[in-house]
Length: 408
Image (cartoon, rainbow, N blue to C red; front, side, top):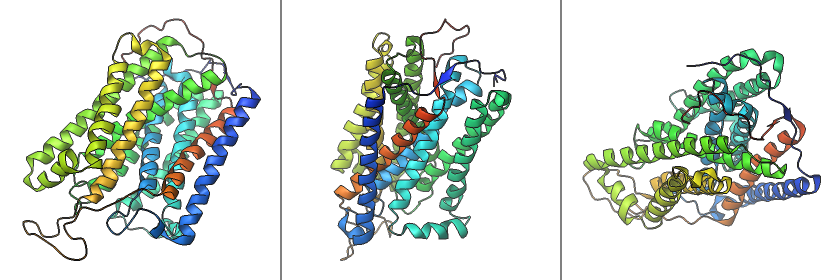
């Protein structure tokens, strides 16, 4: 592992976007965030019976948004890790923005998660009483610890006198975020009562998803910030990030294939595989069209094309497709995994008035969707405030070619 312990000589500045456009975008994001908060209040006052959730589907659309943000937060930090931990000079100036985006998305994801609990005040119980046999208890430490270590990492990158410690801090955050994403994946991997979840491959799958989703969000944020300043990003850097995103998307497709092929090998999982791949209705459509086609095949066609990936607009489209496919993938995992009926007595047919053996029905309600969108807007607000008041933006103009360019 290569480590760059030298001082960061890059010139940074606050976001120099025109005040009118910046504050207009800030007000729009703030309004969406407030609407999301109001939606959470409506669900809190009236109860979750006004949502599409029920006794079969207890994790709804807000969980889809929350898990996506949490997973993407880990991956957004990948750019900083490549620069300071692995010593890749072209990525190093982007480390500050990478760390800020990681913190913002994790905080926003946790906010959506807490507001969707039904009893947010019960979070105090989760923070004071622990069952260490539960992965949920471990995730309390992983999530809060991530914010702390990334905050220290960001400070070390911003304080030039402390730059020599940034690589060591980056190594800690790199390991921590792998543990965080593993813990998130194992929330589902350890649920043996759900055939759609019960799989050890969930851990590496979620790590690959984090790399893919996080880099896609980072690319959009980077290109949007550069456009807001009236500048451009170095074409060579954009192409390098595009190729790296293509590698991550390929890794996601690989682990998805491993997950379903291993399930098809086990007879006990044939039912859930047929449900997701063939007979699941909306879940089958989201899997093949949303996850595989929109989130996988189409972006790869752009990201690995030697001409298309050189244009920032095409890279932006590919990143947006990866994000849309990512939401479809998380929806299929969370909602589809719950919709498939639990096998209470293997080998036996079960029928009762309590929906035993019946596919769960779920239709997202408006408050659920608004809460999720509010979480995204909250993350955007945090990033916009950070860029406006802190020196996060590097000089994005094209730079001289670097020796020893990496294949990322």
